[in-house]
Each structure stands twice: as C-alpha cells, then as structure tokens.
Amino acid sequence: MSKIWVAALLAFYQAAAYTIVHYLAFDMPGGALEFAQIYITMTLATLAGMMLGLFASALAPNASSAPLMVIILMLPQIVLGGALIPVPEFISAPTSTRWAFEALMSITGPGSDVAADLCWKLDPAAQNALTLEDKLKPIGDQPQGCRCMGVNMLHEESCNHPGLGRFRIPAIDEPLPVEPAPLPPEPEQPVQPENQSDNIAMAEFFAKLQEYEIKVEAYKLQVEQYQRDRVAYETQRAELQVAVAPAEGVVRNFYTNFPFMYVNKEDTATYYAKIGKTWVIQGVICLILFVAILYLQKRKDVV
Image 1: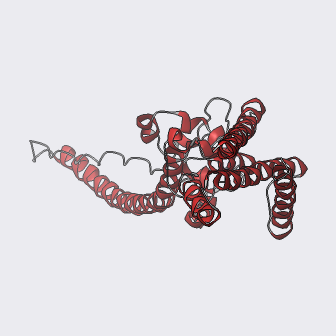
Image 2: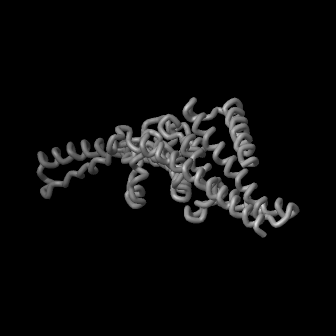
Image 3: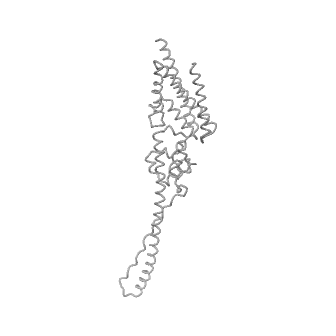
C-alpha cells in the first residue's frame, strides 16, 4: 500500500497534466463534462499501468529482471489496445488500454453520428440497394435521410466522422442532378396516298410531309439537348459517386472492424452505460492486479 498510494497520486497528477495540456493545445470536443470523463478515464488507465509495473516487480525473481518483465507485460497493452489493429474482444478484454481507448473514443464521439444513423443499422444488402436519392429521403425519425451515408456524410454538420473531409467536393453543396425526361416518340412519317392522281389527297400529303420535316428538325434539336443533359447528369452523378463511395468505405471499414468506437451520445442511457462499463472493468483490472501483487509478495516472503 505504501507504493500504491504514491502510484495513485502520480496517476491523478499525470492524468491531469495530459488532459489539461490537450484541452489547451488542441480543439478537444465537449465541455466540462467531457473534460471530467476524459480525466477519470486517463486516471484509471494510468493507475492500471502503474499497477502492472508493480505486478511485474512482484513477479520478477530479482531486480535486474524486473525491467524485462515490464516490457513483456507492456507490449500486449500496446498491440491489443484496439488502436493499431482490429482484435477480437475476448483477446483484448484483459488489457486495460483496450477499455481506456474505448472510453476515450466514446467520450470524444467520432462515431456518434454514425451510431445514430438508422441507415447504418440496415443489413449490407439493403444498404447497397439505396441510391443517392434514397439516402436523402426521410427514414424513421430522420427527416433529412441518412445522416452518415450518401452526400449527407460529407457535410460536417450532419456527419462529423474522422477521415471524410478529404472526399468533400464542391458538387456536394449543389442539389442532386435531375435525370432528363425521356424523349418523346419520333414523329410519324405521313403515308403517301395510293392514288397519286388524286390532287386533293396529294396536296394534303405534301402539307403533312412539310409539317413532318419541321417536326423532324425540332426532334433532332430535342435529341441533341437530351444527349447534352444526359452527359451532364451522368458526369455529376459520377463525381458524387467518386466522392461518396470511398467515404462510405472508410466508415464501413471502421464500423466493421472497430464497432466499440460507435455509440450514440444522443442516447444518454446507452452512452453512460458504456462509459460506466469501461470504468468498472478498468477498476476490476486494477483490483485483480492488486490481489495478484499481494499473493506474489506473500509467496516471496514464505519462500
């Protein structure tokens, strides 16, 4: 206990230094509540690290091997913490860094907008079936459509997710292109009368033929305008798809491999339950290490 209370004081100090410096040096999200939550998380993470060091000291057979034991025990904390590579939860669960990282990601909220988006709760087949227009239609209690899918995901006020800014293009701020109306049927060519000696019928035929030629010229202009409109429509949609598709791929990659990052901060019950869970688990890890230290020290005394 003479070492643990000193370690606890150092944890309080180091967590305060880390949190205060970050809030002074960076544009940290949230206010006083998030500051307190980050401070508590960092205190628990630092204390768990110090307890791990004391555990290594108690486990080492002599003073010279203690630093090596610390290195061996710290490597899993770095690799299995969840920030470097996706790791199954049952593998990373024993590491305190895993729960500290989950708490920090939940508090700072980079995945909050995605977690609140009903479109990301659809199965992959339904997501792939959605068009750009479908993603702007109201869904559930989201009148603006998908918050973090389609063109909305490239608006920071709608979807504030890391890594999406580089996909933003000017066309995102413009309305979606409207598909050109289909062309009307081609004018029907008048049929020449069977009796070409009938002057009245032939006169009517030539009048209709003249009118037909005028319609054909107008129809050609319609076709040319339709082709121009179609090219502009396809070009704009291609530009949007080029921006939206990789942006959705970035979110899908993190959403699939790092699901613990995503919690809806607007759902206060779920959010605080998640934060509380990470704190409790970090506390339990510290307690387990404390009991293990007592056991190893007692065993050394007996030996």
